[in-house]
Structure formats: C-alpha cells, structure tokens
Image 1 (cartoon, rainbow, N blue to C red):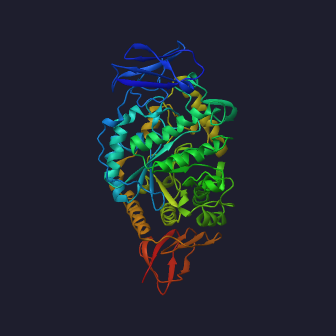
Image 2 (cartoon, rainbow, N blue to C red):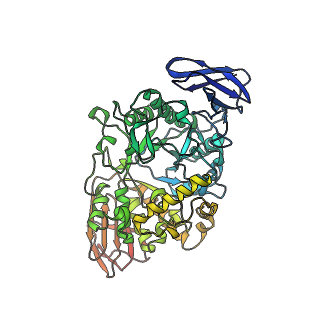
Image 3 (cartoon, rainbow, N blue to C red):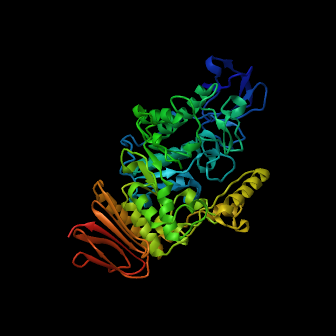
Length: 552
C-alpha cells in the first residue's frame, strides 16, 4: 500500500492514476487531496489528473525515470542502506569546496561516474564537492538551472539510488556534499505546477516571468513546498549544505522572509546554506534578531571580477567596472569592491578564480588557462588558496583542463532555437560575435565540455596539479587569519599579499622586483623554480610567483 497526496486548491476533482488504473482522491484540509492505493508499491508509475485534465507528474515526484513529461515513480527512501553513520556533517568555515557538473565531470556522466573519481579529490585535499543542480530537467543534458521536478534527481545521472550512492561514497572518504538548488524559478519545459495551484504570481515579475508566490494568497503551502524540498535533500540524501541560486530574484514582501525561514529550517536539520547574490545585502548574513536572514555565507563575484580583469586585461561586459589594481587590493582584503557587508567571519564569503558561471557564460567556455600564461594561473591559485575567505574550485582547474565548459541544452526544436538566439544576444555586451557561439542544442557542445582525465598525468597539467596540492596542504597548516596586508604597484604590475603564516608575491611586470620580507619566511612554491630569500630579500624576475610560509 502507498498513500498519495497532492496539493491542488481551488479544484473540484483530483484523480491519481497508478499503473494505468484511475482512482478518485479525497479532499482534505488546506487544498490537499489524498488516496491510499493497496496495490501501489516502490516502482509503481503514477500521475495526477486535475478536473479531468491530462495526467501530470507529481509536483513532489521523487523520481522521473522517463523524463519530465512522463509518469512519476514511487520511491521508498527507507530502502537504501546507508554506510555513513559515523559522518557528523561539515561546517562551511575552514572548508575548500570543489564545484562540479555531474554530466561532464566523468566519462560516464553519472553520479556513479563522480564517485569513481573521488580519490582524486581526496588527494587534492578539498573538503567537499558541490554539485550543480541535479533536480529533474527537460532532456538528457543541461546545466540543471531549468529544473522542474525539484524532488527528483535527474534520471540521466542515475536517479535517487545513484545520488545516494555518491553521497554515501563521498562521506566514506571524508568529503562533504553541497547541492546547488534553484528556488527562484522553474524551467520552461515540463513545469506543470501552475495546473495544480498558485505556485506563481504576477504580483512580482522576474527575468523568467511570473515570480514564485512566496508572499501572496495561498503562499503558505508554496513556501512549504520549497522548505520541504530543502529538508528532503538533507534528510533523504544526507546533503551537508545548500547553495541557493540567485536569491536576489526571490521576491518576498512578507514576514518572515522566505530566506530567513529557509535558513532556520536548514540549520535545525544540521546543514548550512550559502546564497548567490550580486547585491551587497547585509540582511543575508545578519543575525535574525538583528533583522537578518542568518544565512551562513554568500558568493562574492567581486573577488573573481577584480582578479580576472587584472590578470586577463578584459574590460567588457560585467568586467567594465573592474580592472584596477586598487580594486584587486580591496577584494583581497574584504572580498567585495567599494563596499562590503558585515559577516560573522571571513569564511562567510565564498570566492573563486573560476566557477560554472564565469567559465560557462563565455561564448567559447574559456577556462582561465586559455586566457593567461602559467604565471597568471599560479598567481590566481596562490591568491585563492591563501585567502582568508572560503575558496571554491571549479572542476578541472587544478590541472588546467583543456576542455571548455560550454552552455548546453536538450530542448525541443522551437525552445532550443529560442535559447540559442537568446545566448547570442547576451554575449553582444562582451563583443563576442554570434557566429562564434557554439549551438547549445548541438550534442557536440556537451561532449566537448567533458573533462579529459588523461591530462592529469601529462605535462604541463601534472605540474599545475602539484602546485594546487601544495597550496591546499599549506592552507591546512595556516592559523586563522587575524589580519591581511596587501601591497600593490599598478605601474610595475606587482602584488604582495600577506596573512598570518604566509605571504604571496606576484610579479607580472617586465622588470625584476626586489621585495623585502618583514619576518623570516621559507619558500613553499616558486615559479620559476629557484627563487629563494637572501637576508629577508627576494628577487622576483618577470612573470614569477612565490609563496612563502613563516619560519626559518
């Protein structure tokens, strides 16, 4: 026997169709309908019909084995045998996160394919993997930000069982798992929520159209839909933390704000929540008793933009307001440029030299290694992994993977064409020509984005991987920072960065740099090799990077 429940307020009749048999449901309180079906069991296929309409997937479907337009599958979450009873979760503070896309991280493109590569990440030294969205989306391939069945891990990745195996394997190797979730909109294909209830409202508008109904009539159950989703990932999939996509387009004029309520629910379940936001909104990190949402962290794109624009010289698009070395100094000291926000500690700011947005939202999916020389790559890594903020790596950056990370989709022809044209228009602000933008719908665009793992053992990839491993090992030894000093010389193109326990010197100019050390330090890494201090002095030739640790 299985009990089916669905929220469908303002409707006269709701039926559940289980294994091709139609059953009437009983209306209960607050717009909920339910039915107990004797013959239903794990594996049964089902859907709902509202007021005699077409059979649709369950809004809370745990599995969509045939995609977003087909029937849901009954899942018994209790049937999975977990082996991570000794895992006690992980904090954001002190972590190093590794962001990956399940479909392109491994040749298999599945949860199990990720699990097979976890030893590489353990040897690298990271604390956790961060999965780009895995909720069921239309087609076989995509970034995941257009999910529509938010409770169902994508079928092409391995569905519920595959995801649980991955999390279980990660925990067994001492790695946490963070999941990127999208609560600001749903995808354009397969979103049947409006047929069930007022999940969206025209009272507010976003770039995707009607906003999620977090504050209007019947919004209590809509909020519960998303709060329960967060809890489901934590309880049923043992997720350690959530990354909340684009919270600045979550519109809620009620009290408490949805993000405040979400943070409280996530914390009570023993996990943490980090927001993506391009607004310097102090409410994100402020304590609830001080009028804030009390989220645990926030992504800082300013840090990336300030460093990227200096290293590459790019000034178009959203780099237009960046490019000065003074801005880079600000970012290295406070994560933001021009204005920062109060935080419980520097760990609350998550920073990156590369991530899915900054690579994938380029016309050709260029990674940083395609834009800068080896000194620039090593400088970026050194500054990232000695920062007092929380660093996040993007899959493959540790060995300068040659594969681009492109934008790819698997929509029907009409929607696919619209998406392709939209991408070309977006890129116009960067000066990228439309004919140079790969077609997101072309399967080859997806295939080109897959990592080539053979490179890991090859020169020069192996040398950069050793650089990353050494930096992460250094970071593990460093004390918590109490102060940060930054010295820049824009004309000479030099950066001196120091925090408790270490210092980084970067000379990107054309002349030698005779730098003075304030305290005795030993060289941990040098590019090129052979740079050592003499009487607390360093002579750095052009295009050089040196990382030092306090000590004789």
